[in-house]
Image (cartoon, rainbow, N blue to C red; front, side):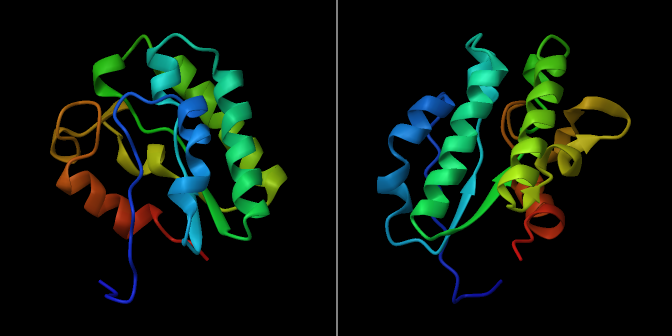
Length: 150
């Protein structure tokens, strides 16, 4: 661990991408790097994935306007939403990949890093604390394998 780094997690349980976007400036204040991640709550609340993708793109663009280094993370596997949410997660992740390419920002492969190869669309039990979010093992795995911001 590099003790010169300070991390701030501005995630709020249940918030959709439009709600995250509304408070982005406050959260990003004083930061050097912005990691944009969201969309699962849009899916859980029955919102269109295209709208979530538009909101994510707007956050990436806003981070760039604020002169931050920006990275975009895709949506995690969702054990508690499987199998119903799986096609929507995969579609949103396709859109997120397009955004990363078009906006020329790094894509952090959260989904593939935490997807159980023996149970596609889900995290291994040791990587999730509740079937919705990563646990200690999942965050450790993300830090070791996915969280590489150039």
